[in-house]
Image (cartoon, rainbow, N blue to C red; front, side, top):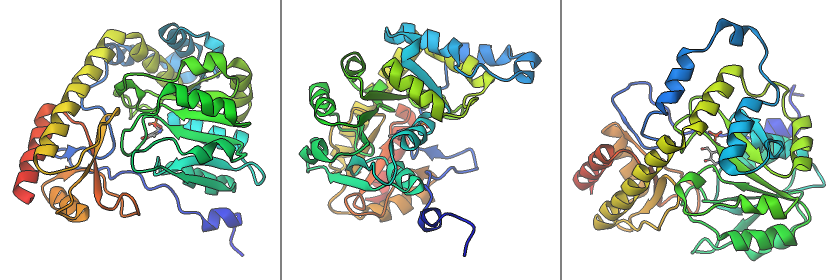
Length: 346
Ligand SMILES: Cc1ncc(COP(=O)(O)O)c(C=O)c1O
């Protein structure tokens, strides 16, 4: 007999996007922001003291909560900080799922959800999206303890209207977690649902819009009862003192954040047009990536040829996605290099 619980032995871990070691690559495979974080972040980092490192951090990360609450016009009690949005996902599986409380989500979506379900040993109810990525009606009646909707959805960037998610929150008995990791690049968001529904949790990440993927910082926004329950599940010191100071500085600099997001959105429009001109089918995306399909050429072959040229995009050899490439929106210069390489390859 092995040392691990049976479901852990059976489980496959999450496969993160490839992180090349050499610097001279065009990395459009893990949805990082192509621009550096706010200058206020670097300033804050330079002022970190030995005392801040010697002491344990504030378990509630109030310096961040207070600033974020002003940005979002909610109370600090509506916010819980996490070691990246992924930490919040783990906390939610631990809090709401077990053998009798399944998780439900539409597919295809963020491939971490089934991995966490397998680790928690809970049943997965996967509701397939239709061709237009509409919210599957099946989600309303699953009886799941946790329903997750990734909005904008990964890996295609589609956006489900707030009113539809309000109906879903109303219809289900369990918790609705709306994964808004990419919402900074969308035109709308579901924050208002937190005021009207006691079962809605919004996930936000500092990795994308704020260019802090390396820091690991995300947060939940929900009503205080849910937040207090989640606080019992998280590690006491799940975010470190340096991260709290840096994330607070980043979210305080809204002007820098908005300028960067606008740049990425403009580049997304241009990249979409350039890819379409090359014969790719590229549905509208509300995220910092696009999902591109070329009916004539195999996605896996294009992926390999791009990698030979040190250009990395994301490819999954799984049903529904094995004919597509997910491409992170880079700077216009990076996108131009990708397009030139594609012109050579096709
Ligand atoms: C859909 C989705 N949700 C959540 C996350 C977690 O982001 P992070 O842990 O970097 O905050 C990611 C990361 O790529 C994601 O794609």
